[in-house]
Image 1 (cartoon, rainbow, N blue to C red):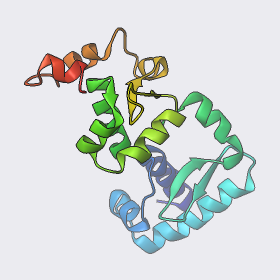
Image 2: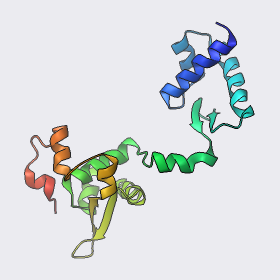
Image 3: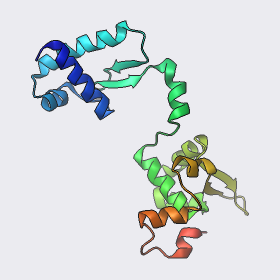
Length: 177
């Protein structure tokens, strides 16, 4: 395989994985020597650097194909939500038990739930309003949440779709006070 073919195959690996990947992993996938991959990667990085495209290869923690910083506004506009698994799990609890008090959420998800709530509020996926006694907040999903996940109706339909509510009492899903 010549260097141009190898660079094309590496580019395909970077595109498909969409995460930082080590030269050893690429070498294993492509059945090549790690040193050969590293040499081709240097050329590929130089290729991307020399053109004025929107993509670049970052090599901070392995190699990843990504959109250049100056185009991130487009990424946020077209793909507005990128949630870590822990934040997504917190969002799932909120959606299934909404409205849920933030203190109850903390009991279910731990103290990191506060950071997750802040991120979800910033991304406009949940709303946060003071409860009656003013000691906690009530959390519930927003129209943006339903739009993003393409849901029609309430989150009960989501629970039914995912068959999550088996064994969960109706009052546990709709109200947790």
